[in-house]
Image (cartoon, rainbow, N blue to C red):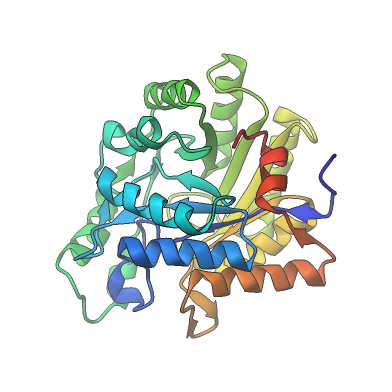
Length: 307
């Protein structure tokens, strides 16, 4: 049975690798906190949870497979249905091998993959924090002034090959219009397979902005390259752009991602205490637009996933 056209997928990105613990006391850090936030997000209406791991002592982004094992195990112990999307973005400075290691180890249904290289500027955040909890935080933020998040064609071919071998669909992270053309090339060469799933990541310094003009630019370019109805797409808005950008995606027929990886605030000056709060707000916005959140089963059908 076809999924109703009023259904939209909500993905919740639980902790990411961008924000530092000094920015919010509610940022999930330990495996217990990350897993519980994922479960709460699913209960609030998220069909997909996007997972990064952090060092439970310092909050630093981590590629430790044992941390991922603990997080995934705890989520699955309480929720067998939610789609788990593991990151291959990892954190600044991680190698391609470190970033993609989660795929053969856990064989997730979805795994993120950046669709090209970009400047990745987090350094302005350092000027807004007066007191840092850990020495790694200002070092990591300031390092990004001269950092390129590298994902070459060779790296993308390696990653997609590993994903194909393990039954994992790449969720293609699009940070600028040029990435759409790179995806079209990968599709033409058979390196990625249809139907493709893309996520427009907007508002990161070094990538495309989050204005309606930027989102329409991505949307109309994708329509020309891939054809209406022949691909799946979702929108992220970084920081205060989270809900305006995702609302525009809903209106245009796209899916959405919210969560503390992208935004720490429930409203102006109000920190979100849990990822479930951000998902619940997204559900309320959907309801006002006469839309409904897709279930995990509906998300699998829409994205052509095999549980």
